[in-house]
Image 1 (tube, rainbow, N blue to C red):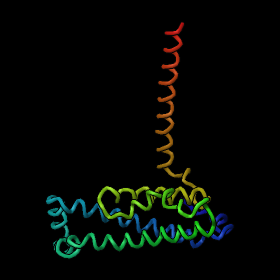
Image 2 (tube, one colour):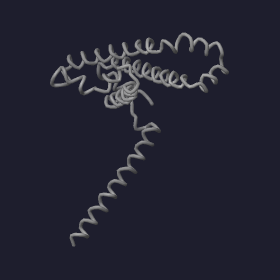
Image 3 (cartoon, rainbow, N blue to C red):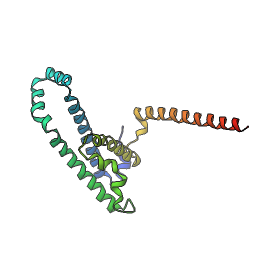
Image 4 (cartoon, one colour):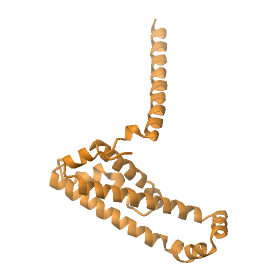
Length: 178
């Protein structure tokens, strides 16, 4: 994915781009770490890590793993600060008709900050929302990526199948009326 420098210089979005890139990195690191810690609960995964590096295994098991929620709360604090900054920017720019609308419109960002199992998965939506925001500002073009082409292909197949079903139902309805 290439950055479109021309569109970046048009607006004053360089600080917001830096924040978005930092947040993408932090969310990705946090999700990878959460996945690693989730698998670390399994004995077979612990044995695999132990075989690869005994010192890392001992360090992670005795120091990092028991305090995972503490370390995750550092990420959550950064995420909350970023949401508050974006909320303040939206109030200053008057993006929404009411100042209180921001947390309701960006509910996945707010709920993703709750450090409980199911809500952590909403951090994936934060990645998607940041990528879409960068695409809308024409800083990146997601239409040229392989994963967009793959998703678009399956979306087209799904739409075609649904429209075929609708047409079949309409034709059956017409046949029964005739």
